[in-house]
Length: 404
Image (cartoon, rainbow, N blue to C red; front, side, top):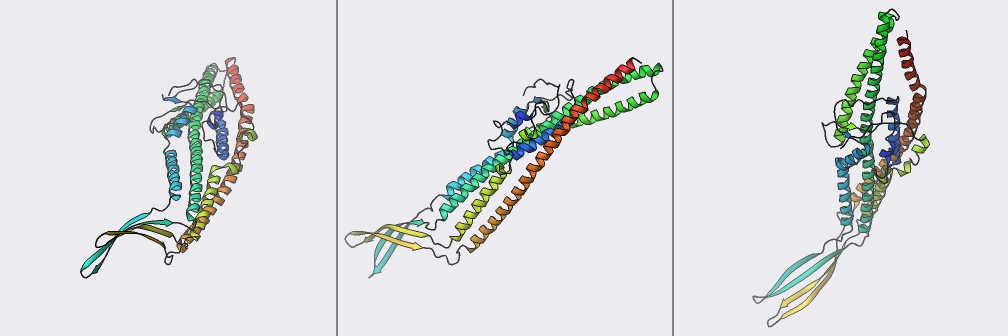
């Protein structure tokens, strides 16, 4: 993957659009996940809100852009491969639930002895079980609900994977930009320190100013070392998400809050009802209810229809005939009681899971919106009030000491 040029004039949330573009994420991506993702973006913007000069590449590593990175992650993630396999299994379950019970064929020989002579008879019979309780239709509908739940789980898993992978990507991008910021101000502070040393030697500056600047420069150097370690760790996490553990990859895109809309615009459509996990839980409840209905009909016996041909050996010829019959299995020992209890227990568990998902989803959407509003307000306030002061203070101090 080729590196892309870095525009380091801004720092914040420029990655918003590529990441939440629905052409690359699932068509039914959950708005709640998008809300969490935007909140994370806004929080990351606080890490690096000041303008950048030139990026410091640090340890050489191949660069990857956000869109290419996300597409690759969604292709190689083993969890998504497992989700696809579960969907394939659910499709097979739907097909299997709709199949009739296999017929059976039997060949019988009967022989009656009279005066020491046998009179053989041969019977070829086909038995066809017929389900008359309607359980098969209920089982097919239940399997279809399970299939829908599996597909929604895959959508939820895909969105969660995209969110976690982009969280690692943006953390690496933020670490790179944070290191560039620290190194830029380290260089500017070092230049100011040279001016103070010159003035202190000439007696125009106090030793206190010199010691204080040296202390601040040392502290800034320590922060730069911490930022380099964070950058190395972030690059390794990006590599791990790309299926290349142990290989560092640089997050090429820069972060920016410029052009980002209001919290209401960003979180528009983020409702609990559209959460795939919630829809999947509802499908599972519907499937379990159908299983309970099917279990209640387990006492209804299967009807077995039989038909075939019969031959009898006569002294001078062979006689042909037919056989026909009907039979029922007797639900004496297995009348479906245990099956109904198990289905009822599974239904109760599915309903409890649904209530849990509803509670968590509602709380998560509300919490994410509040986090987004607070993070955006903090980042924008810092950009307006603090950034201009930092640059002005450094410029004034540099000019003042240079001019004595």
